[in-house]
Length: 357
Image (cartoon, rainbow, N blue to C red):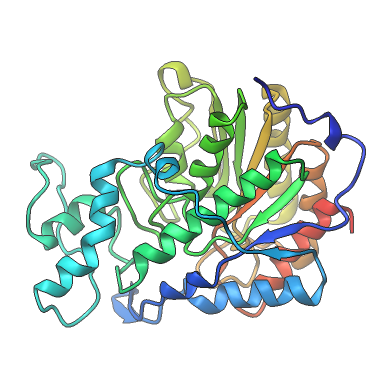
């Protein structure tokens, strides 16, 4: 049974619900490998606090706690052995009496065995896509509830809301079927998209506007034609995650033509970025999805410390309005954005633009 979105065609969003869990604070690691040093992580609890404070200051709408939708929706996207690893990694690390947080030091590189080791050091390397993201106490619990935030947001959309904001933390779009990294452990946007499909939708589109390529989301849906994935991001020749996100990656098998990448070079300004977004939204319109998921990263901002695009705060309002023109039930899922002073302003600007404020 298809979800109908006729009710969404006439009215702007005057108030948008935000789904948010204080359990995000359980993810509070102290170390990130950056520039050859262990530094305070860019992905830290204050990110979510700046956003939720801005939402409340601007009276965007009610802030709701997530419902617990359980593990089944997570298993629809992620490998069970990988999930089991995430649930136990910190305890396994502690059992070895290591002093710091869990960071991988070795990987199954080219021409090496893909067998999963028993020892935690090897398991970390097998399941990690990068070394910057440590696993710390509370990581699994925060990731689990971040996924529940996204699932609750999707349920609100199915119940009739034309736009909902899932303030997910930790983020998710770098997490693949059986990998973590890039601050991501469970792919919240993919889990939400699948939940739409499992509850009546025939097609779902995901547009990733984070500065970094949504490699995990691409990996999950690359061979499928029921999910259109479009990502606008820094050219992987110059930007993390480096090994996925090129324009020739267009899907495989049944998914051929349903994956679209827009890699852009350092210094990209809003006009060029918006041209790519317009093309992506046109493809979404042609796809005729029943719902739209936006992987909302605001690290495209000109002052973000780990990106190189040049969007300004007013630009986020503009592209929120652009997304609204599709008149689709839309779930915004929080991803990146690391300029702490502006992350709340830029995030809420997108949501207010979408709502017609």
